[in-house]
Amino acid sequence: MSTDRYNMDRNKPILLQGNEAVALGALDAGLGFFGGYPITPSSEIAEILSNEMPKRGRKFIQMEDELASMASIIGASLVGKKAMTATSGPGFSLMQENIGFGMMTEVPCVVVNVQRGGPSTGLPTSPAQGDMMQARWGTHGDHPSITLYPDSVLECYELAIRAFNLAEKYRTPVFLLLDELIGHMREAVKLPPKDELKIINRVNPNVPPEWYKHFKNNPKYISPLASYGQGYRFHVTGLTHDEKGFPTNKQTEIQAKMDKLLKKITDNLDDLIQVEAFHMDDAEVAIFAAGVVARSAKEAVLRSRKKGKKVGLIRPLTIWPFPDKEVERMLESTKATIIAEMNQGQLINEVLRVTKYQKHAKYIELQRYDGSLITPEDILEKINEVL
Image (cartoon, rainbow, N blue to C red; front, side, top):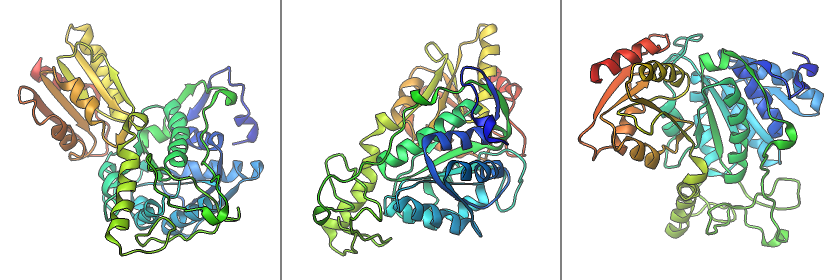
């Protein structure tokens, strides 16, 4: 892929693959370092960036494995670079220990996971949605997760930029979760002009170096972030630490640290959560679906509406933190909800948790995990059972 291709006229549509859109979004967000290891079905992201980043004076390194890939982007971020890696389910599993280190040390970075069938080697070239819970609970210990989930090529671009913005703003690793079909799908998209993009960069400290506390607590639970080489001395460790970064066994400091990791997410839910409501205003039956399954669900909604059936779709663009308030509100007057997932049931329990007091409604599972997409016909069959 040539550089000329990415200097396109943004007033005209361009045919892009989902993985290609992720790479382009990362470049436009200011990606300065990529460290990764090739794995199907995410390899196009690394391939494109290996070609494009050196042309822009940025750094690309193919690491020896996924453990090193995650370690490398944490290190790059600590010296001030916006950093990203891309992988699939098996590689995401290998990254979990260093992801936990990134969470504890509050290092902004982006991890793209283009999902495939599992467990183990599984189905390398087939779609699945089996990593949703790994994106939330993959590491040990208590900490929240920010996970974004596109359903189109354009959203691959947009949410790649948003992932970097949220990582820099909240000082945390952010996950961008794709389905294999979204990563490899091609669509004609019209990208926004670069001067219209909202790009968030990390906040540098505004105090003298001797006053600087790398993990300082404040009412918003978000700290300014110095980089190595700027003249600020600070300590980074995976051990539970105080505001200066040094290990602590003091109960008050331990609790303050853990509260900070949690509350910088839970206190900012309105900023983090995005949900699409498609024909939900008068819906009697709702479909809850994310990613590529939501595309089938939209088609099922439109076909049902043509037959006079009041069906709608709830699609989370942010699956973690889970959109509790939004889901509860939208489902409070529905007769039934179809939870459609390409796994054996990972988000259905979140929907049931949120709606546990809505005893009047039915909750219907629609799960497919044979390496094939849930089709509009699969969803229509479930709709016909209740309407």
